[in-house]
Image (cartoon, rainbow, N blue to C red):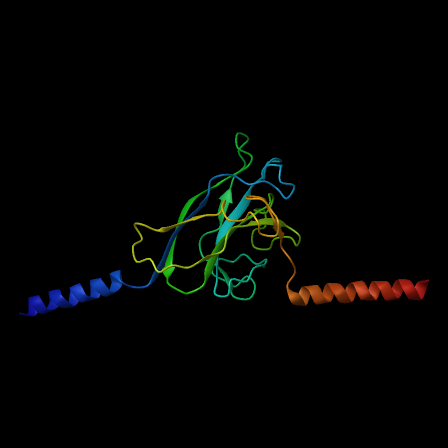
Length: 198
């Protein structure tokens, strides 16, 4: 009887684990990327670049800090490992191989980013003004079967966003609001100094 009871408890636990709310996604960008001019391959000058998957409860964009699991800006959070894309003279457009990611389900949005070349030398603090490709924003899905993850292709869905074509690096890293305020104050001080000197 005890064995039967233990078996029932174990079965209940395994069913509850199997039915746990999950995000299971396989993301990739196999079709290559071009720079903001819409023509030049991403890795035409050699070097490497990086890509990663982002979660946002609100779906708001932008940011610059790249510590996995941390906030980027607002409620953005990097989900998976930062993927390094190595220069290949045969395919300077680069590509993101399929990456699997799984975590407890949260309602929100996922999207991917791939940055312009030269960012792997300091991936945790990208230079302001660095161009990056913003993949399509999609709602999270409760998927309890990691063996059949939801497919996310970051080469689709950007056409029509701000008038950019698919797989073009189409946005730039911008300063946080406090940094932007300091830059504005600095510019104002320089303008006033120039006026006083004149």
